[in-house]
Amino acid sequence: MPGNMSVEDVTNLAVQYFTSKGYAAAAPKPLITGVDHNGGLSYDEDSFGTGSTRSLYVIQPCARVDDVQTQEKHGTLPFFTLFALYPAETVAAQRRTSDLLEFMTAVVGLDAKRLRVTTTELARPLLADFERHGIGSNQIRLRPLAEARAEGTGSGWFEPKGHPNAPAFASYSVEFVMADGTESEIVESAVEIAPPHNGGAGFGLERLTMARNDQHMSWDDGAKAFKQAVEAEAQRTGKPLPSGYFAILGLPNPG
Image 1 (cartoon, one colour):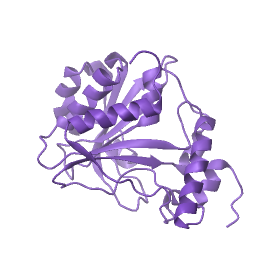
Image 2 (cartoon, one colour):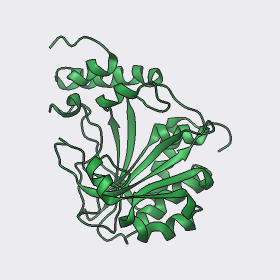
Image 3 (cartoon, rainbow, N blue to C red):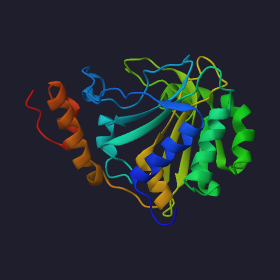
Image 4 (cartoon, one colour):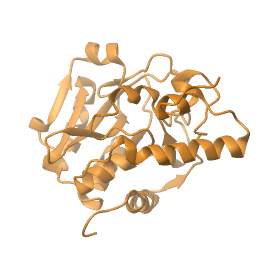
């Protein structure tokens, strides 16, 4: 597709591509979770687990309260959308990584030479897949596993402290080098061949759109969408506005 793409364009491409690969749509989690973690807001898609007899994708609205601290950083948004993938148990190991890379490069049109991968030795069996899709060894960063596990934030190991579902798995992230030299993380995926479980993969639709257009979005670009989404869900469900709503918008919390 010539010219810039919208988030809707990229979403439609993702639905078409992964449907052609045998994935079916699953319903997202609520944006308002009703638990204290992350200010009562969903910030990932981790609840679908593994072991499904069908490959599933979910389009999950998310917000991270901690991102308020880095809102001036290019690409940090108050509201974002994950396109998450959960292959069926019968899907061959490593196919998900190959599908992800093909989608980003051949379908969306990202230049593979501007992609970076951050992970640990546990992902070494995937390096040949990265190379087949144009990501050379000089574009792959292997972190010490102990360092990645201590942080638990992904890019090697995903085990965030206080997460209500207590995920813990080896992972890799894919970053895109923007024209100004900054890196924007667009994918976080479990390493499907490494225990304790093979988890899922998720890419940010807004971040992927930014990479495709080589243009940053700002915090303010997403604030209106965040406000509307949380207020609409609160009204529809009768749930109170969570504390994260006020923290992200910089408003006093009446509660």
